[in-house]
Structure formats: structure tokens, C-alpha cells
Image 1 (cartoon, rainbow, N blue to C red):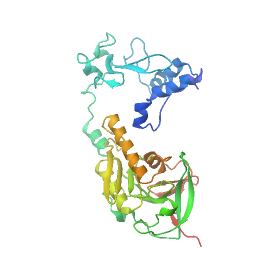
Image 2: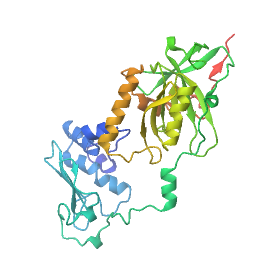
Image 3: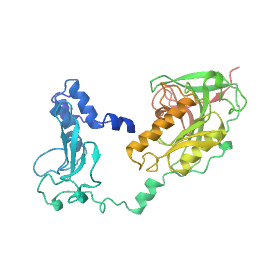
Length: 353
């Protein structure tokens, strides 16, 4: 892929990078660096992370250092280590040694850095505060993406319709799941069906885009949670509200905090929210500095370890994929438990004679 002629039709992308990954490893630069380490030609690798991407998406006058193109530049120390020293936007220095020196390239001239060329600012496309203002309709859609009612514990109730439950069983360090069958049980201070002895907790997926009230209820195995509940609005690919927990009350508390925040992550124990991380931009992104998001995310993960979640399980990444009904074997979406191989909903609670 990194050899001619294939490199001319390939571009480098990332998927599900966490804030800490970006801080400690980088983004596209991390992939380029790894490719070079494994023997790829650095020029080809850099093109695959810049010019090829611009060409594919039709971004005119971008992705290359050449006369007439936008002066969006990255200065690196060498073509092996590829550590970013400076970043220029529209010919203006905006970042240096890992720190922003201005928010907007075209606002920065005279305040920080200097132009890298003599191009008239009117001749290139710039991104000032004025032309980055979204219209009111877009802002409303992006910052108010939750359209569902507050959750009542009764909304998550699951009646006993059989003597067996179908469990979405997690596989350590994999996205694949297995199907497990367990006996229906009712244990004190736990939601019906939750089985602490066999590491089975309750799982819910709530539709949050159209307000249609659809709620899928299922069971999750090998997650490790012993107490409380965790909720997230990052749930590929529909990004509905996904909640896992041992009681309906804690699941409702965690889920309602995410709804109140217009998206994000939350942990609740004994009906009270212990920690949250708002993601108000479409319910998927934070407007906080990346360092603060990383700190809060790692603290929340540590709390969930203390609540029992296994070390080899990423608490939030796992829930983010458990609702994606294209990876075998079982998933949960707003229609209920889905058998991916059959591409149909299957009963969560069923009977075996």
C-alpha cells in the first residue's frame, strides 16, 4: 500500500483515538511515523497523510507545498522521527512545540508568530471568527442533539417471559462477542435478570435523535461491573444512549445526567452521579481542552475499575461498540438484542422446556 502505484490511491486515517492517544502519540503524524519505522518511504507516507486526502475530498489548493496553494504548513525535526515543531495556518504560526500560540491564523498576525509567505490574505481561504460562525439552525442541531424524555426506572423494567436470558458475552481485548445462555434469576438489590455470580449485568440502548421512545433491553456478560451504572452517548454507529448497570435506579440516574448534559459519559452509584464528562457537541465531542478531557476520562476509568470492571476491558470503548449491529455475534440496539449473523432481533428472555 505504501509502494507505487498503490500509494497514489491510498490515504491514512484514524479511528476511535482517545484524547490520551492524541496527547501522547499524535494523530495522522503517529501513523506516518509508524509507517516510516516499518520501512515506508517518508515522502510517500507524508503524501498519504496530506495530499492524497485533499485530492480525495476535493480540497482545492491544499495538501502540498507549492506556489498558489494555501500556506498550511507543518515543520518537523526530520523525516524519521517526524516530531512536529511548528504549525502554520494561512501562513501564520499558530502552534509551536506542542502549544497553541493563537486560535486563528488570520487573527494572529501582529499578535504571535509571523507569516510564512507574502501572499495577500484575501487570496487564500481563511478561517476567521467571522466566517466560522454557524447559523442558528446548525448550532441548535449540533448543541441540542438529545430528543428524549428523562428516564424513569420503570422504563427499563424487563418482565420475566421465560426461564432463560440471552447474554452478550464480551471477549477480552476483542470487539467480537459471544452468545451465552443463563438462567433467569432475581437477586436482592439487583435488577431482575442481573446475576452477580455469573458476571451478568443489564444493558439498555435508548433512541435519542427523534424522540420515538424506542428502548432496547438486554444483558451484558464479562464486563465486570459489580455496583452502579455507566452511561455513554458514544455508541457506534447510531450514537444513541447506551447504559450498563446492576440496578434500574442507577441506570436511570447515569442516563439522565447524560441527557441533561446533551451528551457525554456518566457514572452513578446508589442513585447518585459520582462523575460525568459532558460531550455537548452532537453528544460526541467536548469543548474542553484535550488535557482536561483526558484527565477526567482517565479518572472515570479508574473509578470504574474500583467498581469491578476488568482491567482488559475499556469501559467506554466497549459500550461504544456493543450497540454496533455489524460485528458478530450479539449486539444491542434500540430494537433489542440483535443476532448479527442472522441480521434479526432475537428474544432477550426466552423459555427452554
